[in-house]
Length: 367
Ligand code: IPM
Ligand code: MG
Image (cartoon, rainbow, N blue to C red; front, top):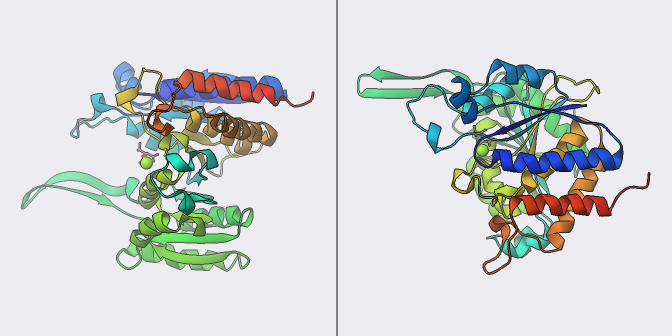
């Protein structure tokens, strides 16, 4: 089984190094062989080759069984007028690999409830998954350009969806709801946007195929509020690309930190195991302010590795073991600075990775 690691920029290399260690140890403990390959993408690839997504990296992704990505971007490449940007690596990978469904689970750890900015009683029992459309909408719609208009500089982006894109995303979300609490919330802005009205229309058609799933439509502005006021009420949340981007950063507050949230991006293409060849990445960014200081929280990357084992490599036991190991180290009181309460002892990125590896070893399955 071949895993491509794309460390990227900022804290990306630090957190993927810990996730790779955990994967390697899992392979030994659970008896499967992983072959790792690494490629440069993002700002690092702009510096090296003038291209955020070099052909070699894309090729390596296409021949891998799964891809683990750290993060891309940073102030060095932030010039708003630059035509090459690190983020193009991520968008290019998503599009080229056909990864239309981005799965972002949010389940606060009981041990961290008191570290979250929201009231613990509000967070108790929260267990939701956002299924974000990832290869359409305003992220990719054409035209997207800057030009000179009658009133000077103007710029536009296009939010466009076709029924095929909506239907496949909704089906993915409904199927996931079936494996969970059978509730689906579709989020749109149908009171204003045409693309959202089509979204809702198609969602209602697909809903007929899943009569056993309770369904509701919620407008995105209201959803932004409900997520903080009654997050427990939601099970699976399906939404378009930009709304999903925004709502998942918001939802990370429920978990206490972006440093804890993994994601899986899946499409229709299968790998050599006959499973989806996914891209797995933390939802957090490259955090340039703490890069290279061993301060980052590697748990989102490590939990992304668990999702990789589950969805792309069919190693459910190992995936579950990683998730238990993470819960274990948090229960032991280990905290990186993003989840530490004031005055509390903190560990670095590498020490956190080591603790997860030790926790895994301690629950070594019987051979
Ligand atoms: C995310 C990120 C990306 C996105 C950026 C880095 C392009 O915010 O994965 O949520 O907007 O999709
Ligand atoms: Mg985002």
